[in-house]
Length: 618
Image (cartoon, rainbow, N blue to C red; front, side, top):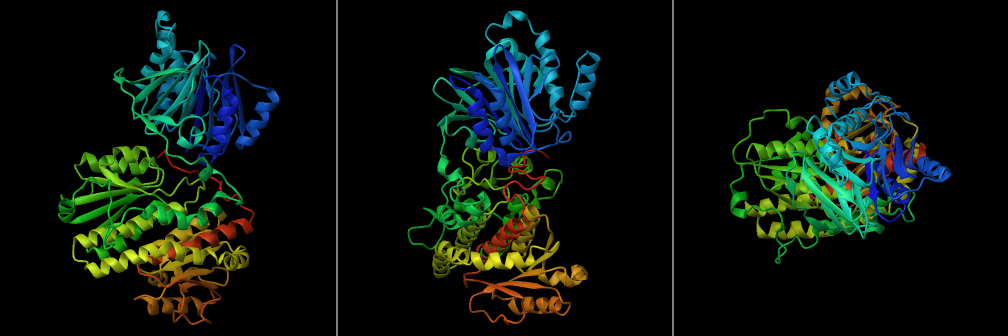
């Protein structure tokens, strides 16, 4: 949630900060602001709404300077107002701060500081922190001021009193060359430029200006000038920086000829699936191979149970993994919401392997689940899409998706990429157990065909757009499927909710008669996922139950299936495919349908209300 960009160097800070904030706007777009060291004082501008509104105001006021911090907000504490927008300035006017995360003990800090005479003008937790920094700055010896140590120590000491999560950037009017950053539970990356440094919460905001980066770890504080930096822990232990090269294609994060990033990313799925598979099959093409698991085949043979953890769309990918791994590898699989796992004391067998899935690699609940799993001594692997992310660095091993940047808040290509990797994991584990060579070869062949099969579904976009226009007026929707189609039903319902604000629910098709059937009426359409497979006839019976109650029906089925053409009001066909590929193929029409319905309703597809990408707060 939220986006941070901070800069110190030779160029105009406001231009670089605004450029970075626009690239991070998918992380929060309730309000935006910046503070610049301008004409020997801190100049702060904040506006509710999008970054473009802030950009116009900055141009109007002609703020300039070579040091500054900026923020685009997703509201946690306090309503969406200019007072609550970041940056926040200390009551003495010396400090400005931008902050991602939640300060859980801010009320106690605020009460303490109010008794000391500090004043507050917002409802945010962040203002308590910036005033706490001002308080510690006053206590620091003035002889530390010349090299920025007084500033650095005031931030560091303040953070020792903070409970919660934070990614922060702070500037001080007494130190017009210095920028301080720190993180705990919320990502922060330092970009190393030529006589300039950039600090950001996402590599996409700094990749145009810095190819070398340092990923800060939890409880680390960095002191930055335009040509130097040093890192220490909040307990003042020196840290040796590890510099990494950015692997980021700027063109991939540009909109190009598409109307929305979600549309672009839906149509990028064939390429994303190919990237997920590239170089990951054995020479005899009978199994998958993964270079970064850091676990031997012999150790995997000892695994008795697998636990998958994720949130939102990633949780749905976990559910698909459960169906595929249990079917093809015959290993029991459990799926947990990452947000619940960390607080449960679930008994786990000693031979349990844990997987976490997160597109960003920064999802706070999933990161906490990973840490809880490792704390209990379980081998914990990750599937994620961002090289250098916290989850990637802290997991015992894992698999990168290589799907490219995903900007749209509603995940599309990242989801199908995750499902592809879960299918490959089912193949890999199955071949370690009792899957035959011939079955493995057939499995690999099916996986390799998936990108072209996805392309054939995408070619039906005009058909899906016409269906979307027909159903955009409804306010309730059901998505129904059986077996591995059930997670896709959940994902379809989530997509429609996220971007069109239509109330939608996903259920196993057979569960409909156990309650949800009460919702069926001419005003509540149902989308059935019914490829021709083992439970095909059972799903047809469920469709008949809806038709008998005059519910509008959209059906997704396999080409050449025995689906009765008069049973559905609208029919969408996907290629007939291996069971491991069907969840991927079935995902495409529900993504497109949700997208076109949202467009038809005039919704802001890439910036849906109340949502933001990469959830880094509880």
